[in-house]
Amino acid sequence: MTIPEVIPIVNVRWDDILFLILATVMIGSALLVVILRDIIRCGLAMMVCFGALAGIYVIAGAPLVAATQVLVYIGAISVLVLFAIMLTQTKAAPARLVFQTQAVPAALAAVVLAIIIALAVGSTDWGAAGTRVRTATDALAKVLFQQYVLPFEIVSVLLLAAVIGGVFLAKRDEGEPL
Amino acid sequence: MTNSLDAYLILSGLLFAIGTFGFLARRNAISMLMSIELMLNGVNLAIVAFGSFIDRLRPNASVIALLVIAVAAAEATVGLAIVIAIFRNRRTPLVDEYDSMRQ
Image (cartoon, rainbow over the protein chains, first blue to last red):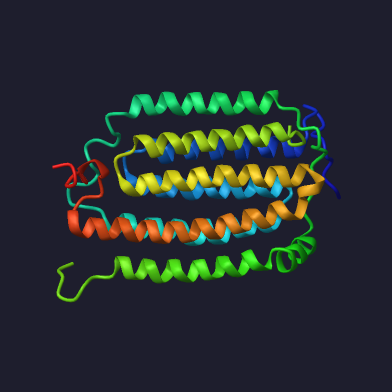
């Protein structure tokens, strides 16, 4: 049995509904990341946001990017952020004030930025834009390991340098108290 | 809706704007780093959207998105290590108390 592409009664396509749900979850949890008072909850909301974004990647037709998003962002970066939060929680935490004094101008600037981006996107004619096509993973692999093999190797060296640098920066010196 | 490029681009612009607000407004250094991650994700969504709608960019955009994810991981590692190192000296994660250069 195959699921019909269009929901029968309301005449809306399934992936439109899915896209709307995922977009709402993503924007909502991103807002929670920036406004919640308890920073641990901010980290957990960030994981939800990245998960919803991985779903949007799948809808957009990039399943490999979605898998990498789950592995790297949800699996690695979020855990790293949660560890850093737990290492830097003081006894007085959560702090009384979450926002700087410039929070209201910052909010205005962000709203203006969003409006400008929306206007620019809406007024541009993407002439070359066709219909949505799924990225074939084997074509992606061919391009990654032939045309982009030098950036790939440079990124691997960069990651090694970042790991060594992170360990060096966060390491305690001899005799220094915790 | 899922077949128009504009929906994806506006979504990525919203995510970027939310990240901008968080970076400018939060006091906690780790919150600021999390906001930077949100902004990087917004840009990545725009790259992936362009790749899935424009034929000429199709496999390349996904490759660029993967490289951006790897660089973001490196950035998060070093950034959080710096925050932890500063926290060890100053005993606070709040950026507005890092004012010893001003005094």
